[in-house]
Length: 176
Image 1 (cartoon, one colour):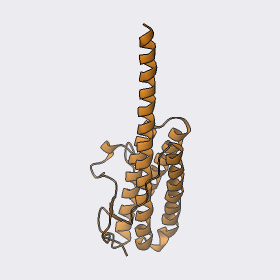
Image 2 (cartoon, one colour):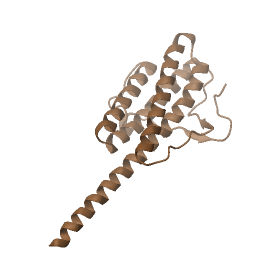
Image 3 (tube, helix red, strand yellow):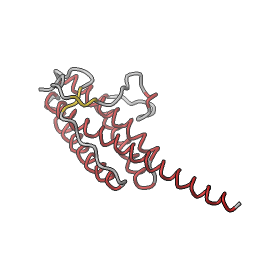
Image 4 (cartoon, helix red, strand yellow):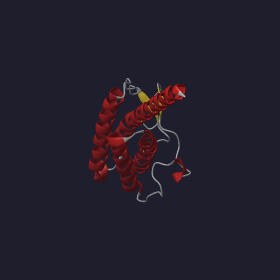
């Protein structure tokens, strides 16, 4: 019977290590999404109409702040923050203000999706921060799109949801 106590402790350590690994993986994914959002908002800012420039700049600044916060989180979890790619492939061409609005909403949907994974993987203050980030992305998406989705951040929320922006070394479609 004394061996079962060791097995139980070993199992608990294994579960704790798996949870920490899942949290680090989710934090790295959120960091990658924030890198892509910062890049994407550069395109949005170049194409959005004058009336929404302030809103685009506020979203850009918010994503930069979250990106920096996530880099610290990854380090706190014992990881090395993933760097931003030189360029990202956009989900569609962004030649005008209307498509810039669609891109902004898409960026927010994608960020919300990865934050939902971080909410699931994290605990305590990190979970609260991830939930707040998910909420903020969902609110920005509604502002850009003009309508909401039932469950922001969940893959089932929309038939148009796709994977996060893909880093690329080639010139990006829609880049000014």
